[in-house]
Amino acid sequence: MDKRQIKRFLVSFFPFLVFLISVASPSGDYVFRSVQPASLQPSPPPYVAFRNGTFYLYSSPFGTWRYPGLISVSVNGPLIYINSDCPFGLPTYLRGPGGYELDVFVPPGYQGTCRAELLYGSWSAEYVFKVREVDWYPGVDVRAAVVLNGSGWQFLQLAPDGALYAWGVEIGQLPFSGCVVERGGVLAITQQMPYTELAPGVLVNGSPMWVPYPQSGTSLASFLLDLRGNGTFYLYPAPCLKVEAPPAPAVDPIAEASANDIGLMGAPTPAAYVLARPKLAVAYRIEGPVATVVAANGSSIADRIYIYGFGLPVDMHMLLYYIYFTPTAYLTSDLVLFGSKPPAGRLGPFWAFPGNGTTYYYLGPMEPYLRNAPLPFGAPRGWAGPFIVVADGTGRWGGLPQVVSVAVERLGPWS
Amino acid sequence: MELTPLLAGLVWGLALSVARQWAEQKAAGRADRSELFPDRDVVIAFIVLGTTANVYSALLIASGAPQVYARPSALVALALVTASQLLIFLMALRPSRLDLDLALAASAPYVYLAALWIAAQALGAYTLWLF
Image (tube, rainbow over all chains, first blue to last red; front, side, top):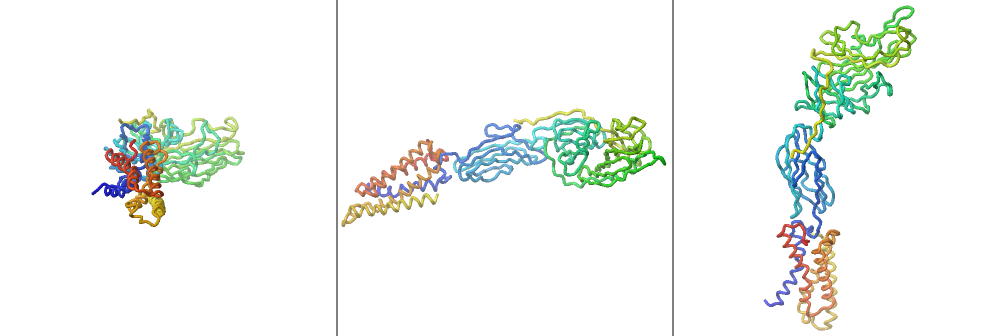
């Protein structure tokens, strides 16, 4: 073969080299680009450590721990493959060009080490995920450890500003609000109960009259705890869990009011001393797994009464009522606030009225209601309340719980 | 393989090969062209394939803009491709006895890209532009 033949062969062959590169490259035509197939930006939350391509993640026994946007991927090429042995719900490929925020979903209780590799042709980037389980609700990095002292079931409510109410009475202030409550490794069922002001802008004994009302802006997270002495619960500032549970049994506030003479009004007239029972009608009801509220209101000869029956699934219930004294022509009038018999004893600030299997504990406002003339003249006027009646069928209820301590705990990186 | 740059290059290559036929005819007059230009079969094929390869690689390199212009190896490739295409123009419009050597010289960018590709495979790099 002479030189000319070799030249003829080479000249025929060389132009195919360009197409051979294009076809034979693992990344195809992308070998002609100089920008990386993908640029990666890990953005771990403060409680996740990230060093040398390794994420130190948490998993939770309570649910899937979601890390939104843990890795920002800007795909420059046409495609990035993700090869992973992690059960984190990562996509298998990302189409480009475009930006992606990779969310990592760590399944409940997952522990171990796994890796995810981003591939395009001969280019690759690898991340290692080390996961440790922690007794913590997923997705939040702070919680409040609250120690309560009390006995029996307690109906607790948490206002958006962190005020903690038990049976409608404020017992403490927590540093933040939330709707997830854990106690002893178990999540309590919580219910967001819509509240509104009964008369906007009116203060009774220095506080507004908050009452349950459907479709209101303010919500109180309500839950039940069974206390025996000191009990710790953890509050997480997380949205409520969806609970599929039957609604709590309803109480009939009209029957309760009638049986306990709530709102029974007496007034002297020239002819006789008139005793009038309020005529009550159910206004609305709010059903939920923790408490079913039945609201009833009605009027008597000299007042209007707003009564809310909280039915609980633990053989207890609560009545909360406000009374508005309408202007009246009667010179004096008397109101029966609860029961017609004298109370049998006291339990803290509550008066105890033992009944047939159920003990009623009554708590009225600590200040007398206003009158339009000094005693013994005149008639009551304005708003009075809140009157709280706790009906205990369990026999274990020991009064309002006390907040022993509140501590804020923060989740830090574990490595 | 990208179809659009491939077809664009092929159209240009065919046009240049027609131009080469016309230039050969003009140079040879009534003489036998295959005797005057003994390598005209290979050279016409090279004009078509070389133009296709040049247009294809130039468009692919330019599609990596602007980052690719920061790589000297890519700029060298672009310069070689441009020079190669000028040589092909020369071959198409001025047929001569040096056609085979000119075609060999015009193959420089392909050899350069192939060398870069082999090096990139050896280094595990995702791109041809190693420097």
